[in-house]
Amino acid sequence: MKVLSAILIFLLIYGCNTTKVLEATNELEDETTICNHRALLVDLTNNENCGFLFQLDDGTKLLPSEMPSVDIPFIDGSYVYIGYKKYDEVKTRTNSLCGQEDVVVEITCIREYEDEKAETSLTYEDCESVRNIAKTPWMKNLNAKLKPQKIYEYDYDVGYLYLFNVNGVNYLYDCLGNQMCTTEDGGDCLSLIETLGEGKVLQVRR
Image 1 (cartoon, rainbow, N blue to C red):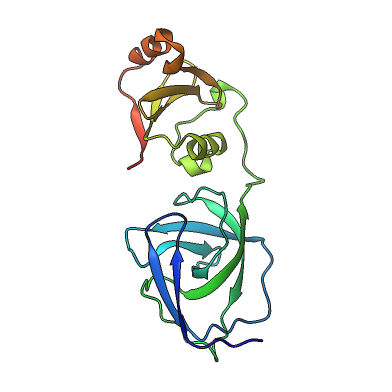
Image 2: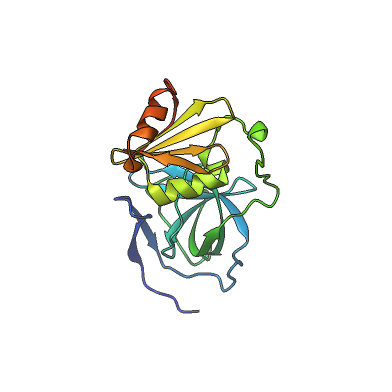
């Protein structure tokens, strides 16, 4: 195993202006875990030294010194699958400025998490009010695609309706993820939205 001299590793987490500093001799253990460890994304971007942590099912919080670039939306409370390498505890000294992690690791792979037990609503009667966007597959995917500034939920005659506001354009969806209309198409959609009353705010993106 190649041992590098002590270095400073600066990591930019997922497009944020979040920098963490790791001081280490950078000697990694030979074994790399396969990409099947479920990890909960913990958003600590309000701390400029942390960014996102990866919390394993046993509660261990991993702070990445390095990680691959992936086209996966990082949403607090959602899951991903990861693989990682641990640093040699004897030969490596790590010094994190975050302080919220249990261990510093190198993330070797990240892939999307698919909950095999999740059930998709097939009828409007099955729909329930959304409590967590990250746990509603169609909404999670649409949120990552459209990147709306706001998402509203409306109680409707048949289930619920959801309004995605994207740069002043409104997209209206039913609770099964089917697009009903958009204000780009004309006045009929706007007229429908005006009849819905005051909706519940699910997300505000700043």
